[in-house]
Length: 280
Length: 351
Image 1 (cartoon, each protein chain N blue to C red):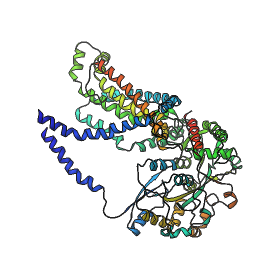
Image 2: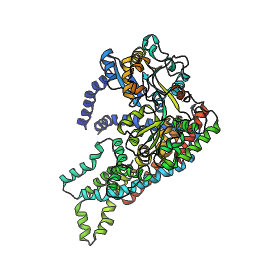
Image 3: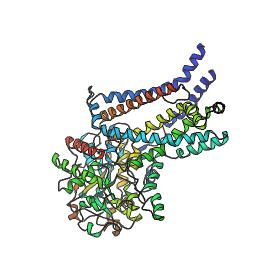
Image 4: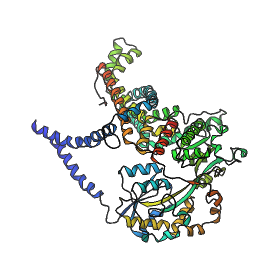
């Protein structure tokens, strides 16, 4: 056992080092900047900016929640459908889900810009058929669409993973005991897939609430999210660089995400399944 | 377990030489050049590498502000950078630029006197002009009524008739510059009330604006997605190539004139090579190529003389002196005005 213990340490050492350098140190830096002023003195003043950007926080959370909900509704049937295929076809299907991710995220978002524009693909097609077309680009709707498109695979994959693990005989047993389709779903499938749903929600909500590229490209710089504000403070796009305020806003965002994840994990425990959860 | 530990150690051992080697790429010097996107003629860096044996590591940025933040954070080390006037004066003041040894830059003599001793570098110690130009109002002449542009005014950007078809600068300095000029104030105003009035103008404009963008202006104007936009004169030629309906004018209220100049960072350890690069860029051959390909005006007199008259006669690229007299170069703003600008811009964008 002792030998094993040493081996374990040796194997995990690079990961521990990695985590310390790329997770612990950056978070410590964020916390340091959040509570200091330009001269390095301790202060709470940076935190007051949360109130100034309260509305922006709310808009970001709202759009991220909407995107997450849409992703969930779209992803569950897809994940279920895929999980019912024979193993080899499942692989192909999952490949297809992942395929767009082989392309750069920015390029995919740019592509949506040309699709949605007033003279874009959809509108030109619509006009060809005599319709007036629609104006979705540069609205919050376009931002949500961009989020759903970009993050949908992160919802499908964990749900799919959990669903494939459910033994078919469990469903058969439920049916044998007289459960209709609806009851099978509501009382067997759904509770058993909660861990996948929870990790899916986290993996979509977290990047959605902190994005700044999607809002810039598809929102036309008019839908201003908290990610945009943080970016501005770090890059000085507005002519002012302030790591301290940027860090304090990031910290608040991080705490909000942590709180929501804790709440979600709590739901997860209620469901009594702790398998395959990515949260943590 | 043991096997895995062994394989981990082995893989580290295998990787080590790779990591160690990536640090030194042969003997040749590598010069880090940091420039605006789409702002160098094709093949120029290759030619420099061939002629001098100095390797060029070329990277780009999209605004003076992001250039500044990259450098001030110390996250990256560059040798040659090409900021605009007001950013150069800020960087000089903050001691970020090295004094150039003009003995290494003999081609500097060919830079026109008009572009020397400007406010941002009054003693010509730190910078060598690369290109210059001015902002213009661009419009799609097929869709915008001739009567609306007859006035040649900034007000076109506030014309409600074109609501949703107007693009605006996504950087505060240029956006406020236009709003201040619209109200008849200086772009370098140090009067708080004038800045607040300009912010009101920009807020009033926001409902009419289709999007706040920078480089995307190319696509959106060429495709007819938007009809009116302010931008830098040199880029209009590229848009016209894709869409002959694109026209522009220098607004009668005045516009910003800018000079982008090459500088060497104080932290550079390859100053002599950097100066060699600057000298190369100022040579008549390269300056001519740059002026032809980029469309921006060249400060290099010999290159300008060799340029095709069809380029030098374009009035918005090489404006007549009386129009130039009506333009303003950005100065470095005092700290409190800079903060005000930042706050006001965020306020405009977030509401």
